[in-house]
Amino acid sequence: MRIIVARHAGFCFGVQRAIDVALEAVKERGRVYCIGPLIHNRQAVEDLARQGLDVAESLEEVPVGAPVMVRTHGAGPELYEETRTRGHPLIDATCPFVLRAHKAAQAYQRDGFQVLVLGDREHPEAQGIVQHTGGEATIVEGPEEVESLKLSPRVALVCQTTQRVERLQALVQALLPRTRELCVANTNCDATAQRQEASAELARRVDVMIVVGGLHSANTSRLAQICSATGTPTHHVETADELRREWVEGAKVVGVSAGASTPDAAIEAVCRKLASFSGPDSEIEWPDRQADRRGDSRSGPSGSARG
Ligand code: SF4
Image 1: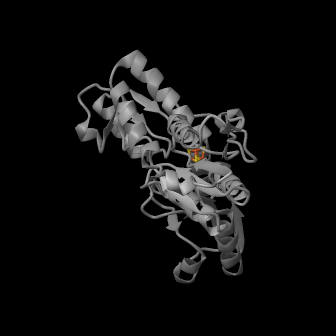
Image 2 (image 1 turned 30 degrees about the vertical axis):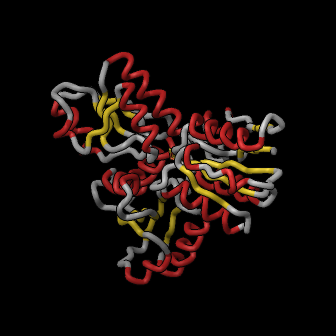
Image 3 (image 1 turned 90 degrees about the horizontal axis):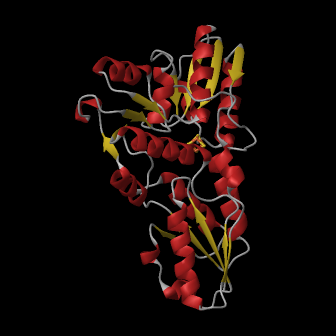
């Protein structure tokens, strides 16, 4: 059996960078407290906790003087301010792609635009972008909401990094007839789209697809849906232990994909277990992961991380 790992799978540049920053901080300063889980992957969060990165829901839960880490999604200025006021050292792992969205929203706000953020209302990243405009920007979940918006003649649009570009295009189309001036910052990050495209492409040429990642990770679940939509039998697992031999019985080529929050160790364990089902003749093909981890994408971040 041939086992092929998708061209883009597993940790994106931002998540890998955040984990490197966290582990470095733990080494230098002892226990570090991340506000909210660093990534949506239970095994990875538990592993990081064993290494010294704890999760706190709010600053109230952080012991006096302990270092606080801001995760890849970023946070609003209030959290930075409160962290300083309480005397916690701050470690900022906000992804540079997210910082770019903060900066764009702030710049438009300064220039007098009404700022709209295409994103999920409940998502901390979209909320963080709004907070960087002093709470003035409005989150819009899609073009269907434009009708009910009160719009000024000058509107600027930025987006949460994981939005689909088709949604951004549709929103622009809906806004154009209702504005005199419309500025758009495409602050989308390619990592999500690349994982989706690579998974779909792989799913079309294999007998079975295995998607690895947190069962509660929206991005990983979406990958499983995309693979399944190609017609190839697809299974979403969180760990190698969940794999079942009968899923791959008779398969010559099995594809493996994973969301941006899935550690390499989880992907490798799945590949090894699949290989063990078919014996010594099996081979595993890994892509070159380095471009992913450096953030070499079509729209690489223009700025560097704060802090
Ligand atoms: S998905 Fe993109 S924006 Fe989000 S952490 Fe990864 S690289 Fe950064």
